Amino acid sequence: MTQELRVQFQRLPSNPDLPLPARATPQAAGYDIRSATDAVLNPGEIRLISTGLIMELPEGMECQVRPRSGLALKHGITLPNSPGTIDPDYRGEVKIIIQNLGSEQVALIRGERIAQLVFSLFQSPEVSEVKELSNTDRGEDGFGSTGTG
Image (cartoon, rainbow, N blue to C red; front, side, top):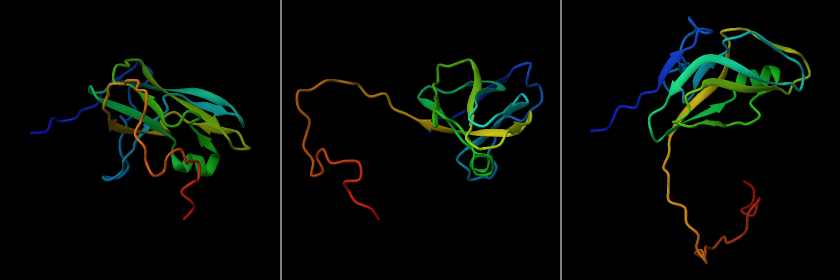
């Protein structure tokens, strides 16, 4: 029997009423998360945006924070550290680092969907040092060595 995976959220006083992160459609991978504050971002500006939420992830799960494609296309809004990683032992407020890459000022309104959260299970392998690694046909070739198309 598989264990039920559950991500738990706690609201901060700055967010008594906004919806919890949610998927826009049943098959969406990302859960939209909202801004708990109003903010105006000037072109090129980077700002830390509060969500008013604290999250508890199950052991062995990370949360990846990714940009929303609509904000990126329409306004040039992105996340400069994308994907950001939230570890399962973090218990601080979920805050989103946002950057305005557009040429116009962008106003974010409290309650606006500003990023998406993608949850992923991970493994923690043992790390070791060896004197030699196994060979492959590809070897050291990289950075476009497999061609285009």
